[in-house]
Image (cartoon, rainbow, N blue to C red):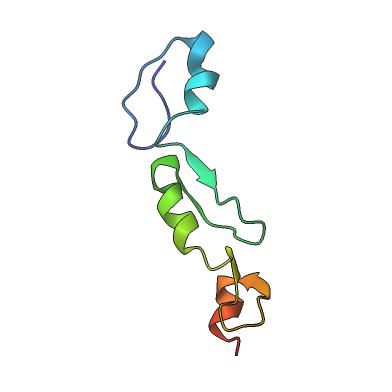
Length: 76
């Protein structure tokens, strides 16, 4: 059976299709940050996670508060 993920050319046995989807680099997956609704191919997820405005960061200005990257932009 051909993988239905856009861009993937893999053909796998029906019995292994679910396993393939678990590792397919082209399968659309959600961002792991709880407030983010972004979905992208697994192969680009790592780049998104590094720049996601919902990733949690610690303030380096001295207060050491933890907040989302988006909130940190307006923090002083």
